[in-house]
Length: 314
Ligand code: KG4
Ligand code: ZN
Image (cartoon, rainbow, N blue to C red; front, side, top):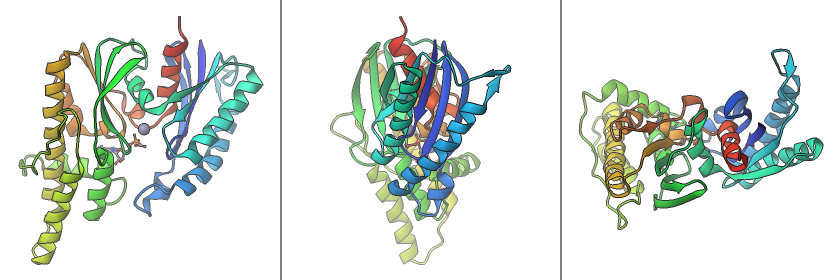
């Protein structure tokens, strides 16, 4: 079975082809460089860039050959990200997917982006249940419990900011650049032995919900107070202690969830799952851990193709 998928929910335009759970081809164009100067994604600009980028991908799709065979043929299904995401960006993926479905006379599947992140850990792998998935990205932070195929429950989610969003905001406050996650992660790797402390760990009514805005405020307050007192701001220390806090907070919450739900497998997904500190911590939590390959941690069409494959296979 050959599936063609499109992802365009945020600022990445991505095409992928999956054949019987084997990745055949993937191409992603990211807009990070463009949004960098604004410190965050500008939706109107993102849509316009998708129009430009998707045409580049269509051309590549038509021209690419593997083993002398054109890849743009014999699709059984066309899949695309339907929701959630930026409306203007989603529509561009949808219109191209719909056009292809009409040309190839094949069924089309509109899929959920967040569930897609869950499937990013199962490319070339089989599903297992129950699975507990921590999805952490620039827009979402949630704990999903999959008890069986197509049946999941969100057992906890952020009540305010998403983890990636806080990374980006703190990086901006510390003048580190955008996106903040990889920059802070790098600082953490170089300084973690020097600065073991952390900011205070938030509490929420539902023990599996998250609240990250308190951590953000604590970091910003520390910077402001040092500024007021004209004292030196040790950026490496603040960034490292911030990441220590995130790791410890996620670890405590996951331990509680694992104890309660006793999953067979735990999965880490979403853009923030590229974080070295979080990945290493996650690996210590359970005997059975799946982490997506780095290229599938950020938004990509292969995870959407993988999800489509699961939805339609017998
Ligand atoms: O899933 P994703 O690619 O996009 C959306 O959420 O739409 O996630 C992007 C987020 C950004 O906030 C970025 O700062 C964060 O993932 N990120 C990281 C790392 N790499 C990317 N956060 C922490 N550590 C990283 N190494
Ligand atoms: Zn995403």
